[in-house]
Length: 221
Image: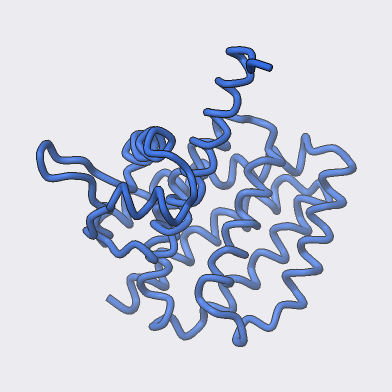
C-alpha cells in the first residue's frame, strides 16, 4: 500500500524534528564544542536519520544562532561569546517576567498542579550529586515548562531560543560557579508563585533570577 503524500510529509517532518532536537541538545550542552565543525555523515549515523532531515535541522539551528554555515567550508557550532551575555540578558530580563506573570494569571488548574509538582521535585534535588548535563537539562525543563504555561506560543518560541543561548554560557562556566545550587533552587519559589497565581511575585522572581545569573557569570570572568 502506497503512503499518502500527507503521511510522507508528516514522517519527514517528524524525522527533521528528531534531528533538530538531538543536534540542538548537543550544541546547548557543549557536547559539540563551540566553533567545532559539524559532520553531516556523523550526525546521520549517530541520530539515525537521513541526510535531508539533518540538513533541514541545521538550517533551523542556524536561525537559532547555534550553528553557522560558510560556503565551501561547511557548518560549525557558533562560538560562545561572553559579550553576548548582556544582549541575551537584556531580552530575557523583559520577557522572562512577562512569561512568568502570564503563566500565573492564565494557566489552568492542571498546568498549575504540574508546576507545583515540578517545584516539589526541584526542591528535593541533591544538586551537588548531579552531573553537568543532568543539571542543565533540569534547568531547561523548568524554564520551558514556565514558557509553555504562559500560553503565548510566540513568546514561548522566543524565550526558548534565548534561554538555549544562555544555557550554553551557563555550561561553559558552571564548574567555576560556587553557588549554582542556589540558582537552581530559585526555581522553587518561582514555580510556586506561578502555581499560586501570584502574578506580581512570579514577575519579580523571574526578573531577579535572570539578573542573578548574569551577575554570577560576570563575577567569575
